[in-house]
Amino acid sequence: MSSAGGKVATGSALLADLIAAYQHQTISTRRYLLIAILPATIFFLVTAVLAFYASFPLIVRVMLPMLGVLLLAAAIGYPKIERDQRRVDLENNFHLGVTHMTVLAVTNIDRMEVLRTVALEDEHGEFAKELRRVVELVDGWNQSLDDAFRRRAKAVPSEPVADFFERMAYTLNAGQSIESFLLQEQSVMLEKYQTVYESTLDNLEVLKDIYLSMILSMTFALVFAVVLPILTGTNPTLTVAIVLVMFFFVQLAFAWLIKAMVPYDPIWFLPSEVKSSAETRLRYSLIVGAGLSLLLLIIGSYSFITGLNLPISIPLPVYIALPLTPLLIPGIIFYTEEQRIKRRDQEFPSFIRALGSVESAKQSTTLEVLRTLRHKDFGPLTGDINNLYKRLNMRINSDLAWHLFATDANSYLIQKFSEMYLHARKMGGRPAQLGDLIGKNMNVVNQLRERRRQSTITLTGVLYGITAAATFAFFIGLEIVVLLEGMDINMDAQGGMSFDELIHTESYNVAMIELMLYGVILFNGLISAMLIRTADGGHQANAYIHFVTLVWLACITAIVTTRLVGSFLSV
Image 1: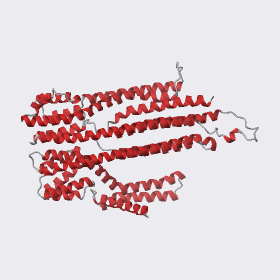
Image 2: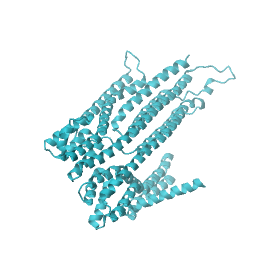
Image 3: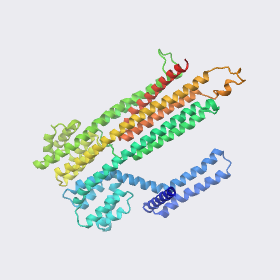
Image 4: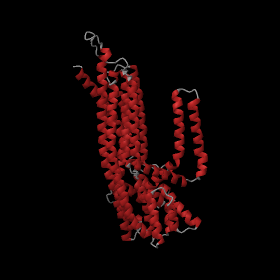
């Protein structure tokens, strides 16, 4: 009864979310029913009629109504999917958006100017759009600011953002200044951000254990699919293909789950309009790595197909792994640059605090303070600080100088926080208070990133272990099949039973099954590398290192397993 009640509650919640999504669409519900739901329903009915009455092959008649159901379900669920995407975007930008508001609120500007400034920052995504709607309600519809926040709180799809808007509406209505409210909210928001971030990492640990269990189960299933047909006489290629499809879907599903679960915390800042020297170096490394991989692929394919007389015998797995090896070049360069970015992020809170406190103490300009700070040791950030001083000293546009500072650092957080500091200073903010606010925020993020790094190391070890163990199991099963296929035993003298009646080897295409297993190795290496990159939060090119290493690990395991098992079983 309790499980049935839980299902009813879950269904009611989903229905309520769907109704809310329809109510808060940008177009009316009636219009959406006419332009989306009605055509999808007609298409579904047409496919159902064709499935019953048309003289199509059976597979086509089965797939047609499934396609209609899929399209109808997509049309019905699209408003909720769009609302969920808005919710995720709001919550991803909530932390930095509120921090930006707080940094501006401690300046000498009007509260509406604070909202207008943050609302114009497109980098804050949906959070900036919501603030723009608040500003439009105040400026265009003459509503009070607290009423505007209360109205938007009922419409936003995110519960944390809705609560924040409600609290702001209440405090503004009570006469509290936006500065004092946001300063109080800052500590609460940081605690919530830290709690959510850490709980997400805890969920990632649970998901990692589930992933390990599922992949081991699929590994055993694949081994059975290779070995059992020799006893049952079923088509082994078909059974292996079915298990492989299931294996692929399981890995893709977990890749999607991990991507949806991990906290939004980008590391890189790579603007399209300005190219740093590091970005140029990264681009050339990609070109060189891809070019060498293509060259090795062509040479290896030609050598394998034509059967060139090489001085040594090269196993097939080497032909698979060797062309991927040059991808280590961009992978290592991206990894090295990313470590520099992380070290810059570690040093930035100290720099921004020192800059703010010295500016306040000496009542001097940023340029004068940087004249002395550029000689201090801020690790990898020292050169970027020196370049910032030189640009400001040349009297070029200060906005451009700080933007180039963030571009050289290649750091997402440095770009965000340095821009906040610059804008707040221009509006009369107190440097020491600004530096303390920004430094505290960034220290919290750096601490959470360290926790995330430890979690990623654990996940990496698990994925490498799974890869080696699964490959070992795959090729043990394949070697057993090869051994039984090559056996020639005469059992006619014992009860008139032939060996072929017990062992069915005639349907085996060992070469095809072996190629399918190597396809699993490549796919597993790719998905595992992407999982590590997603969990780490770094650049996608970092996956090249793990992809190449995982493929080499699996190929070496396959070679060793094949030779050891072959030698043991042939004794």
